[in-house]
Structures are given as C-alpha cells and as structure tokens.
Length: 364
Ligand SMILES: NC(=O)c1ccc[n+]([C@@H]2O[C@H](COP(=O)([O-])OP(=O)(O)OC[C@H]3O[C@@H](n4cnc5c(N)ncnc54)[C@H](O)[C@@H]3O)[C@@H](O)[C@H]2O)c1
Image (cartoon, rainbow, N blue to C red):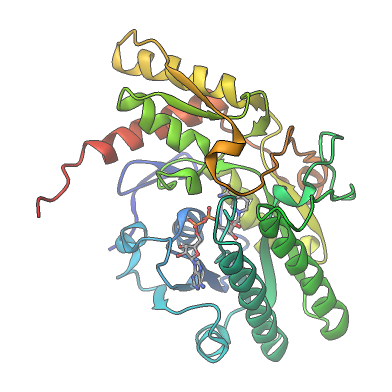
C-alpha cells in the first residue's frame, strides 16, 4: 500500500494526514537505490516516505531498538521498499543488504547518553559508521552521515558555522560521548573519502521535531513538555530554562537530507541543517502551554518544576547554553531553507501527540 493519499500543490500528505515534506519534484527522472539505516526511527521513517514519493528505491535497515515498525508499516508492501531487521554492528549483513545502493544515508545511532548508556552510544555510533563506510568503500557508494549540532558543544559563538571550533567538555562527563562519537564519525568519513575516493556528506542536524518523534527525552524537550501539558502535569525544566535551542520541523530536516543525498555539489562537505530561530527552553514551555490552550479551548495555568542538573542523575552533567545554526552554506549549495515556523510546527506536533496519547492502551 502506498504512503500517499493525495498530493496538494507539491506537498505530500501521508496516510495519517501529516504533511511530510515540501520537497518538490523528483530529480530529472534519475532514480536511485537508497540504503537507509535507522529507517524505522523518527527521521528515517519520514525520509523513507519522501524518497519513495520522489520515485527512488529504498532498502531500509533497522534493529528496532529505538524505532518502531508502526513508523514504516504503511510502506512495507510498497514495490520500491524493502525492510531488513539488521544491526549496524553486523558488517556482513550490512554489506549484504546495502551493497547495491547508489547512496547510503546512515541514520542508525544512539543519541542520548546524557544520564546513562555512554558505552552503547560509543560502540553503536563508531562501529555502525565504520561498517557503513567499509560497505561504501568496497562497493563504491556515496554516504550521507547524520551528525549533530552537539559537536559544537560549548562554543559560545553563535550562530555556529561549519568551520567553527568544536568545544567539547571533559571525557569524565558522559553526555559528551555522543558528540565525541559523531565527531569521530565525521573524521572517519572524510578519511575514507581521502583514502578511497568515495563521496561523503556530513549533515549536522539541529533539534528536529514533529509527528513520530519519541515521547520521551530521546525525542527532545518539546515532546516531553507536550505530554506533560496534556496530562496536566508539571513541566520539568532542566536547570534554569534559559538555555536556548533551535527547533526544526521534520519536513524541513528531511528537505535538507534529501538535497544532501541527491546533489553531487554536496559531496565532501559538512552542512548545518536546522532552523535558526532561537528560543529558550522556558519560552518553549510557555509557548506550548499557550498553543495547547488555544487548540483545546482551555485556560490552564502552566506548572513549572525546575530540576537542578545534579539531581537528575548522580553523574556529572554539562548543558549547552546556546545552540543556533548558521545555514548560509546549506542555503547556497543545497538550496535549503526552513519553511515551517515554530508555532505552526508545534501545533501540528501537539495535534499528532494528542491523537497518540488518546489511543487506549491494551488491557493485560
Ligand atoms: N532528531 C534529531 O533532532 C537529531 C538531531 C541531531 C542528530 N540526529 C541524528 O539523526 C539520526 C536519526 O535520529 P532520529 O531522531 O531519527 O533517532 P531515532 O532514534 O528515532 O532513529 C534511529 C534509529 O536507529 C535505529 N538503531 C539504533 N541502533 C541501531 C543498531 N545498532 N542497528 C540498527 N539500527 C539501530 C533505532 O532503532 C532507530 O529506529 C541519528 O544518527 C541522530 O544522531 C538527530
């Protein structure tokens, strides 16, 4: 069954009525075979929808550790989509499944070692990327790697430019293991490009959100706050809430990824992909409270609970104070420009999340 119900003036609407992308027409009829690791995750599943819509063929890989089969269920019978439950740490199976690809988009990763699993983050992110690059080397395949805004770390100079210094904190603080793993991946990919002449693109993604985001901190503060507001709970603000982020609606993130995989001009480059609208976490909470009241015709007061970093876990923690991308380069080379404003994107996300939360849980 196809993912699409209809196409409205270049916009695509999927079977659950969410606009997935504003990416325009298929590229000059050039159909590619695209390998996507992490295809059942938040970004992976939206990317699958979009590239199938653009006429490409997709081999999707996921071990379903953090992703959900429900995210790709509507594509499982699509003639151009094949899904394999494979772990990216398993080189033989990765190569076996992805060797026919024209390009591999490597999204499978662990991304939040803040309060725990630093070891899994480091192993999955380094071994997985090595296996993807090795597959690419042996079979001459382009690779697009998902890196992260977290690599800029504590650099106080905003907005972050791709050439800026990356200011990571001490190794005794586990939260930096994610940034360190992605930084290692970036270096490894450029080393492969230099040694073996395979094209690589690194995209540094900034806080993507929207339908299908995880309903936990894994999905970001917006998803946790929406659930807390809808359930009438206190909103848990880490620290003083004055730290800033740049939230990017998922269709904009996907536009950036698609341009990176389709355009040869992207090869050999790093790109920031994100919105440059900066907002404090506190203002985000207030905005979500307002949007929920507007949407559901309520006048609920927001209840905030400030949680010191030290009481979240017994591990040392450091937060990033400001995070804003400079997207000049992505605009010039990829034609990337975020189109969905924060209020619009959050409203869509709230509507989606309300539907998900309202689904009755099965009784045991
Ligand atoms: N979402 C964001 O805002 C954001 C920001 C910066 C970077 N990124 C990067 O983008 C990529 C995708 O992020 P996402 O938000 O979709 O995360 P996600 O957790 O929803 O998706 C990742 C997918 O990878 C799969 N996976 C994890 N380990 C695996 C393994 N060993 N083998 C096979 N599959 C495995 C998971 O099951 C999941 O489906 C990640 O590399 C992440 O670091 C995302």
